[in-house]
Image (cartoon, rainbow, N blue to C red; front, side):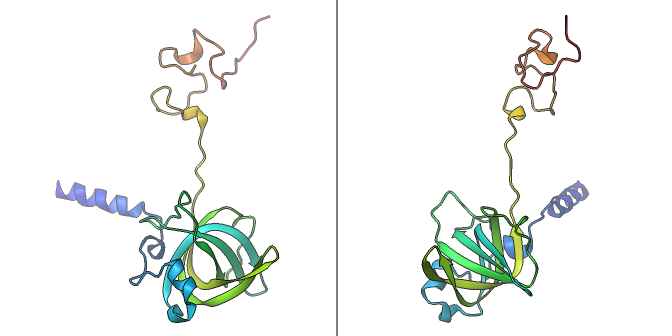
Amino acid sequence: MKWYLFIICLLLSACSTLPKEIKDPPSNDISYTQASQNINNYKNAPVRWGGIIVDVENEQSFSLVQVLTYPLDSDGEPQTDKPNGGRFVFKTPEFLDPAVYTKNSEITVAGTLIGDIERAIGNKVMRMPLISATTIYRWPVYVYDSRYDGFGYGYGYNPYYGGYPYYWGSYYWPYASPYYRPAFRYR
């Protein structure tokens, strides 16, 4: 019995895809508000911040990404239902494709606070904290699929399912499902 538990724990730990730096905050976790009030006191401190991507700029040897910051949950995922705290910029030597790192994507960054940088937002120039990123994690987008909306028993998608648990195969109601396509038509 102990071997089964060991194997199950091993398999479950293998399913974790979050990088350690994203899942676990630094030992002296500095919040965005602490750092933005006095950046010089926290220079070269490890940070883990996240939010929503606002802008991606690619230079010759590095990329700069501007992020609207949100508080993080226990796994490091931005909580976009809470109020935002401001903006920060992270720098990475990697090329970050703007088609992949799109605007409004959720992201969490772990790295070192190296100072601040000026960025224009409309006609206003603002100073934002600048992070040298060591780990970048783009959160996956979950899409709601209306085919699995609670009708039936959830054992996979059946294109002929009529939408009610008592009428499988659309035998009684051939057009009850928006996904039903008859193989032939009566003339």
